[in-house]
Image (cartoon, rainbow, N blue to C red):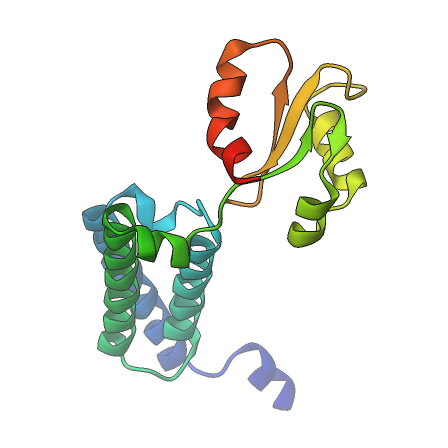
Length: 174
């Protein structure tokens, strides 16, 4: 009898999960569709935290011992807060600075920028891996490597005037 309890507790629990999954999923989709694509974009660390938190809330709704309306309210609160923060980020430099990371130049014109690498805790091997992932075998045609606000490493090729345009703001800060 103990073995059965491990695999199955009751039809009531199964029905509860089915109903909560359906209602929670519909509620979450409606909330996300009304607040736009940005809510789950993972453009920066803050966005990633919200995405993980929404997923954790959904799991708690399905498997925890909370009321359906409590879970839906938690979704609404998280999505609403995310919408508010992103709305404020676009309109306020202070909020933007508090929420978003700045891109960091890690490699530029043949030199590893050790100060920025220490700040961001990125080692040369990680920069080289990013360069290799673009299909390059070396740094000879690489102008720069930038740690972006979302944590990705961007590799910028040499010899393209447009490249200096996208690096202008970063070069001013470093």
